[in-house]
Length: 600
Image (tube, rainbow, N blue to C red; front, side, top):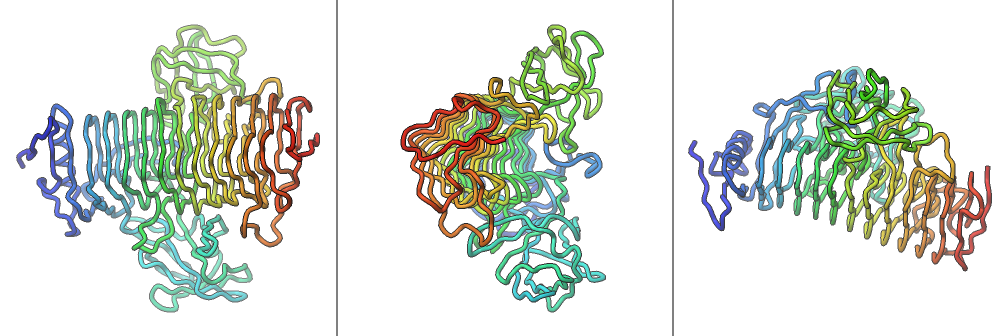
């Protein structure tokens, strides 16, 4: 087929339908998309690929098969074959705008919908992505008794009943056990539960209607929606690898299998005015199999603004680096590093010219720095770095190494989070971060979570400049999960040598009846100021315990609590509890009505 395009204002304009795509036909649009991308990619200059409005179907038969190691997905035992089935692959593409003009791309099978590998200056706008048959099955409880539960299966879910067990099926996949969640449409809340179907005996009452015999296990009440998946992150929704100047705007992603939008060692990324929620016409309640946007080892600016994150199975936003563990020093200026978490390995995490930090894992404190001259893959898990100088004195196996160069600035502004069973925003980056003017509506765990660890998930690193302001936190968390949680996993904590610093929490509205407003560990210069803290309306569950303290500080110094408005009653006790820190480590403003207690 001849290359078909026209040039307007110096921009080459391509149309997907000129390459054989037939909107609203149900036919596979993938071959036409591949031809159009190849044509646009050959053009020497900026290109615009227009998608005439309609529905376009993409099937896995002619999808690209490429091996990619992707962070936080699956271990070698869970998924030995790292080959991804990629419907739309942009590889080495520059200066391309893909304008969906409101179109819907509907994907069939278990695929990565879109991947950008080595791309520069690419914008994807006015486009909606969805699965024809999501890999999360849904069913609504219609009746429940002392030993049974009747459900109506969603029309987009398929199943087989064999020997009293339900097997959920789709195009190329099948499972009968895995994580389950419950969604209460009245309270607009989602949380994780035990899989009620694993131990139960099932029978089909009628097409799309099942009865589970629970054997004494408690049932979910009528009206609840149950969501179940197998848990294997063998694909992701969108993969952005070693790319820069990537923008997604004015569209939506309505289901993602696996880890969601994964950004790995890329720079200058923007996500704006995107709808991460089920399309209303589907009647579905799940958008994300796991995280929504997962940013690992990136740099430059990452901006997430004006988006809706609704109906997930894990965290909407997670921004972090990766700690590798020092396992050997074969030469004075060479260090052997290892990926330690089972689900994160295989990708290059260091590049010549990068600055690195050597970190003691028990304190999470850096004790030396270095510069990378060369990188060699010994195996998918082991990597050998050659440094520009000898490894520091005191370096020993078990220490962690962080890539300091690949840390992004982050702005999370004007977003809405709801029906989230975990945290809202996770952030561990040493660059400037602003989380402002967002609404966190009933996250089951913390609204904002700041960690850093070198022994569990191995997600680095320290926070140096974080502002959380102007947000509304509506009934987030529980007695175990504070609304804002700063919790580095350092086993040895000293207020004089903190992990994090420069955290300001100001001008937020925190509505809580069960959760502490703030729990912070190992922070220097923490400021909690000019916030409004009030009881949450209608959110507390009967009999659910409340946190013992409204604010708890552990091994902090230079902290200030001032100018806040605390409502009377209906919240955790108005106590600022201090642990492993001197009383003068906290400055309390006038009129805060908090009494300070030192606790063990």
